[in-house]
Length: 80
Image 1 (tube, rainbow, N blue to C red):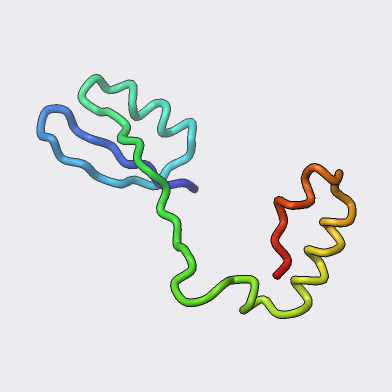
Image 2 (tube, rainbow, N blue to C red):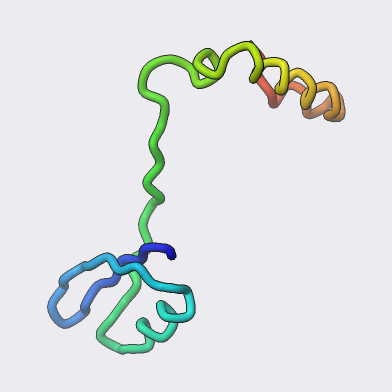
């Protein structure tokens, strides 16, 4: 189930709740509750390239994908 952030308009308190989409839609019908939408939490690469850590097998997969693409899109895949 996804996590949602909600702000209580009366108190200003923000809390995170785990619930289904249908439960969330019912929850925000309360006029004192507002859903807070923020940027997704993404964990990025810290040290070195993911491609280097994936090894030679991943480069081969990328090369096969690249061969199947139209020439105009082949430069979108970096296989270094």
